[in-house]
Length: 440
Image (tube, rainbow, N blue to C red; front, side, top):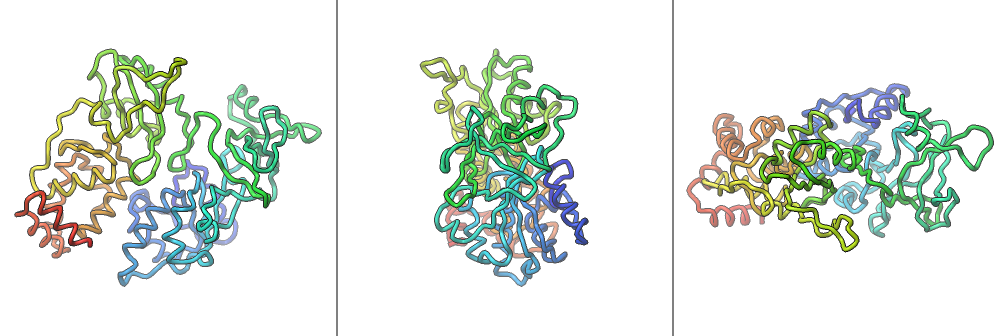
């Protein structure tokens, strides 16, 4: 069980194993956030069925690539990898398929929603899907459900035309607990059957392909999915506007340098400097779960508007330019190790400037990016740094200092200690050249 029991994916993981005589391997939180440790767990436990969000699987792919040239065994027992929780971008599976092909293990994309008991459709992914650049194909309905692609008048749309997906059948929930108005809004009477049969209005845009399979196109409202979590952007904005000193705001989804989605908040303050990313994130955590707290906040004098007076999303500054819109002292790296970490953070977070006093989680970092950072450290310095170390020392200067002591105190990796000793005497330009040559 890779996912939290509070995430609907866990229902499939738990009962999919136990009801069919399987063994359920429960993954600890730290292992689930440390790709190399999780990869080793798959090998040791001989896992046969793996459920993953696409974001988590990409981290596993990177960990496997690092182990490819070592003596570490591969998870050869793996028969199937089942994707769910967020849209699957087929192009990101290319490295895995190049190494393993599409037969063993099988890759299966499943679309689903909590209101329909986790899963709705399934689709086996083949190498030709990636080669032909197909979209996020989600396939066909599982046997106990009925799917309808309808327009705003609840009429079926032709093949190839986008419409909203409606789901009916045995897997449909009774409704939302003690939320009768929302239940009536989302669970509607089916216009295609007699009696009290209902359909769930998903809010997802899909279209039928010529072969009868469905392709996922996105959301029709402000609801988004990030790392498998369903998020209403309007709910975050409502919380922000309740805070003293915030006059206007908008929350948008942005892609970082690696293409991963993250939340970015844009705020207009009554007095500049009242709030900054760290204090805002801390305040929001009292009302919202972590996955709904924006990774970064950008303060603006006003929100940009179109000629019609609507929010001009295209005019919002990109997170990469966030440093020009935030008030903070930028202190340059003071030694070669800090220089290395600054360069890594810039690359991982997609930022142009980073101070040695910046906090990783207050300038756009989150657990998924943290695992990517540690993977890069392992590749560059041969340091296997636990995820908890970054949570305990999120300020760059503290983390860089920890890396130096890590190599010296642990003494388990003489090569890393020797490398740190070598670069200690080099200039910033020489450090950069050192790693260019090392990774050539």
